[in-house]
Every structure is written in structure tokens, then in C-alpha cells.
Image (cartoon, rainbow, N blue to C red; front, side, top):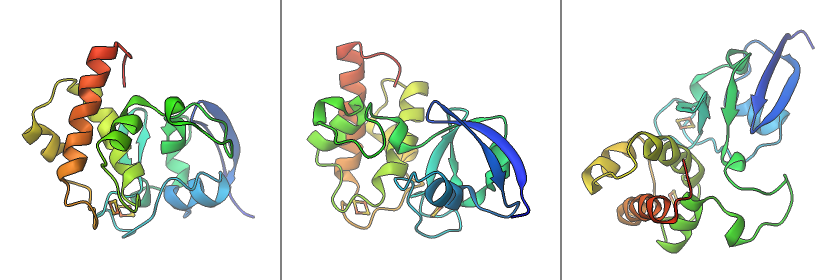
Length: 171
Ligand code: FES
Ligand code: FES
């Protein structure tokens, strides 16, 4: 394969290898790294399903090339919880934001959920005590065909409460 050598930190692990210059970050994460929690919906930046953190800021992985992560740090939804890839995980091992979504019934089919969780994590780091309107604005870049959004807003609000009350630290 004619590729470009890159190295990046992905969910805390160093990754190095060759990638094709035109390979999208979303396809790279799913097919080259095996992180299929990053979902692909619209593939043109509208739905938010592919959202990951690049240097702790949310980005649309379908709008970036994999080569652009060279020298940077990427976090996917798999990086939120404590399990190793492929390992079974209990609710207690989930990230506080994931647990809050679970408790608030903030997902149904779950297709939109990984992207929303990544946005929520970055959002709560910037704004640890948001209003419902601020949460609505924060998740407004994500399309969900199932929930009607109400419980997603409640899930983020519950996560904020838990993080503050439990002293679970930075999201
Ligand atoms: Fe990237 Fe929809 S798949 S925004
Ligand atoms: Fe199904 Fe959001 S829970 S798309």
C-alpha cells in the first residue's frame, strides 16, 4: 500500500503505521484500528454519529482524513470506559456520563449515542453545571431518530450532577 506514516495516541495507546492519504478518520478508526464504536451515518458532517475527541475537542471523524491525526491524541467512545477491547464490561465500569445515560434512558437504538457521549464529555469539561437550554444547544449538532431528545438532555444533566456530587473528577 502506498501510504503515509503517521503516529498518534488513540485511547491512551500509541498507534503507528501507514495510512492512505485519502482514508477518512472514521473509516480508519473502524477498519484499521477496530474501534467500531465510532458510528458512520451521513458521512458528510451532519448527523454527529462519528464524533470523536481530537486533543480533547469534538470533531466529525467523517470530515477528517486519518493522516491529520499524526502527532495528536484521539479519544473514541471505547476510551471512556475501563475495559480492554472485546472484554465484557459491567455498568459500574462505565464512565459516569455513560452510567447517567443508562439511568436516564437517554438511548434507544444507540446509533447516535457514542457521538453524543463524546460531545457531552467535552461540553461538561467546559461547563460542569449547565442549564437545560445550554445542554440542548450542546447536543444540537447530533441527530437522533429514536429518543425525541428529551432523555438525552436529562442524561447530560444527570451526568453533570453525578460528576459534581461524586467528585468523580474531570469528565
Ligand atoms: Fe460524520 Fe454523520 S457520519 S457527521
Ligand atoms: Fe437511536 Fe439516537 S437512540 S438514533
